[in-house]
Length: 173
Length: 284
Image 1 (cartoon, each protein chain N blue to C red):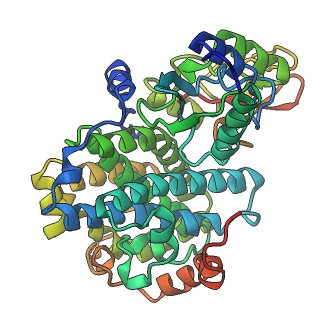
Image 2 (image 1 turned 45 degrees about the horizontal axis):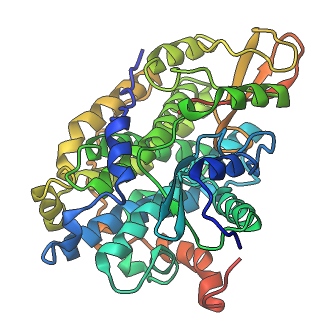
């Protein structure tokens, strides 16, 4: 039990210590899924948005957030599901992008999720991807997409033509 | 080159401001007269995504290629995520103490409101891919229209789901083209799949009193308003896939939207609902 109610800045710092269960090198704050932290009376309300609507990690994430904040002494706490506006990879922090890359996951390339789809499709039918994704292992740009779906809903499967390693690309939405 | 509709990005700032003030208020939830039709319409959306999600998940662990196995499992997961949102809202509208899980696991076949096309057995990969494409083309057109629904709750579900469905449509279009314009064998199977599925496609565009009631409130478009866009997408992709648009009647098979199903749904539910029926209230 805490004597004084912590400021929301302090809470944000605590939340930055909660890891994403699927990609443990980045925090839920890096991922951009914590949308709001507010005191409503004596209750701390944390609004969390899902990355993908069927993401099975959602309940684990909520549990981890609650566990961590309780360990910090917060007793009166509510986690709200926030659907709108829908999550976008634009909300990934710069620090988060760097950590993803160091972990072996190519970070999303901004602004490629929406407008360029026709061009991408044309390029793929012609045998290559219009996206220029850098291999997180060797840095080569000679890479190709294997599948737009990967080991978790938020990732696509890619491979490097130079070092021949497969890797995950965090796809734009 | 077939062109697919671009994803519509909702106005993020406006949505964020609205969300920060608390749950988006939806006046339609208090409209008592509208309740039965609104509930039914939400079940049509949620049941179609649930049953298709289940059918697609049947490939998990046995798809012909690892990448396809993963893609199918991801697609199923998205669809089941959409179901939680649609049936969750349906339960709120009904306001009778049920939740999304109860609606999914404890209703009998006649209470389901899904399109017949999604309950047909998964068949071979050609049938799975072709069904996914025919459904995705409808789903994408519907969700795009729902972004401007007068119901803020419906609009926010659509905005979330559309991002994922755009990927679904891109993948299924791509596979229809590759398999249609592939080998003699893949082309034959794709033609066969199209012949089987075509008579079920007309149901997507049949407008009844439920559709009319929600359309009158501006919640959703009338079902028949989506046909032109759907035909355009389907024609473009089939052309590229060297497949002909079937000449058979598209509306020979219908009834799912009002609870008259094929014999396949009962078998599917027997498997899907088994655990909750045998061990009521069981949790992970």
